[in-house]
Each structure stands twice: as C-alpha cells, then as structure tokens.
Length: 162
Image (cartoon, rainbow, N blue to C red):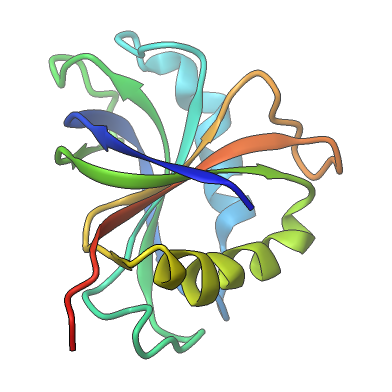
C-alpha cells in the first residue's frame, strides 16, 4: 500500500462529537445526528465530510477495544464566527500526516487500519502522534459501497530510536 507524508497546516472544524470505543461503536448514530444539521454550518470550506478521532495518549501502543476516544462528524470551516447551537469546534494543529487512500466498505476497514499501525508506519520509521486522526470523505465516498473511496490521515512523527 502506498502512502504519502504531508505537512498539513492548522485546520478548523465544526461538528458533533461523541465519546465511544471500538467495542461500543456509536458512529452510525453520530452521523445520523450530524447529517441533517450540516447545512446549518454556513462557513464550511468545500464539500468534504470529516470523520475525526481524538485518541488518548498511547492509545495504539497498548490497544484495547474498550478504551474510550472522542469521535467527530464534522466539516472544515474558515473560522469559528458562526457555530450552530449544540455543535462544537475542533482545531487540528499543523503537523506531519501519513495519507492513505482507502477503497472499500467499512467492514474491510479494521484490517486496513491494522496494517497501517502494525506494518506500514513502523516500516517507514514513523510513529503515531497525539493529534487528531481523520478520514476525508469527498465526492468518491459512497457509504458502505465496495467502490467507496476516502483519504485516511494519520498524524505521525519520525520514530525515536530505542
């Protein structure tokens, strides 16, 4: 699998968030609550949807599917001047990201992510950073379709020698 590393500037997001774990997946409910309201965000940039995660420090070093994290359904915005009632803001600071193209259904995604964290990043000499992770769902995204495509953005740092 090919990936590229990109230094991404600071990004601003507005959306809804929910604490969950992989064992207590509430992603469909989060998106069902966000999608009817996304038109309320008047300062969105582009048409892309962002599925973001804020993981606790060390989440991937001692992975446990019951460990909670914060999941976001959001859009990128150019400022925080107009935030719809009940929605929240997220700032992703500037930093290096490994960007992967994913094609397939959500059912095949766990194996894809396992390969990212256990093979591709370590082989590239990269470690996971404690910044937001996200998937960019643009024009080629088709929910649960085998032909669906999205970009996976993983925050990375050069691995430190042991």
